Length: 485
Image (cartoon, rainbow, N blue to C red; front, side):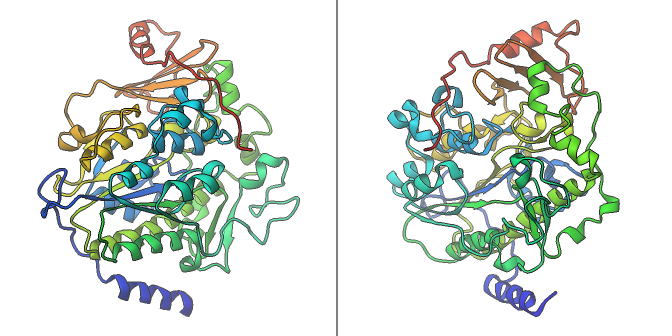
């Protein structure tokens, strides 16, 4: 470790002190002295279900995520609204479903949706209108909206600072830092490597976490809603020194992959997976012998994001606000690393849609797990409910407060995810059903097939299951709105 890194970490340790057990309040929606709850709202970009507290990848190192999980409600079956950054965040932050707004893809401009323009009040704006001081740093809205949305939707928004991990000195016009050739525009961001000259404490996500830590250590004369957007493990998987080495390449375990996995998938699903295309991520990685390197790079990026989260949690445990702050941590969508012969998100299967979701509410039992299917669309009404704000009638989700009180209560709503016009998936506690715009279908039984290897739509005995799940497929499907100018 360099002297510079050691001194920086020592300074942080002196500032934050040693972690102590977090105190608890006594009631669900109010702190002990009747002051309103604060909200710490943490987004982690492209974080899939490999985290330790979900029993994901056996080599994942997520001690801080696991530490937060130990004092939170863990929603084991939490799903994004759209498996893509922009529409997922638009849905969560407006509380509106994509099939009603027409925001399906990363390039769609939320402000060109009539429904959003006429009826939406974003989550931070709603809290601001009800007496909260709202502040944020990092990625909360997607970059497609960010330059316009972020400053306008928060009382104060801080753009990311610190040294970027977005460019690598070894990358050239033709060769990625990973050593793979660049064969198209899509390849340019699918890269990984160590940036030796950037120290952890100088990097952007660390600076974003440090902002949250500093604000948590301050007194505030109003309740606050603080957003903190951590960018990794989003591509490219460039990390500071010391991270790749934690995951020896020869020991890396690949996720279960079935080479004929797409044989029973409809043509539209096969095209979505892209795994049969020689130019696809999966085929390229396999051809160049890079499958293990990609998994290692993702695990290293997760560990980097987890270390940044640790700065926030350490500060909260020393904070005057530790006993009356709700913590919500969420990933905006999942990420495939070869499952269904697919990489990235942009698909309707489990790995693209399952997300980590943790909610810590003072005064509630900690470390519990809820196995009911829930959606990120539910976060808007949940937070207004917990903070005793009037419900926003223009949101589509349902408050999770009853599940926070009793995670085993009856819950008859599945989670619905959408990836494009008339492309939907319904996930209940056992099954995943997919319907594409041409009517083609997939059905998977997670009790017996957690990898979604066998499409049951042609099997006998499942029509009643299909019919029941099909009832949840949205009937209203707005056309895609225009792109950002």
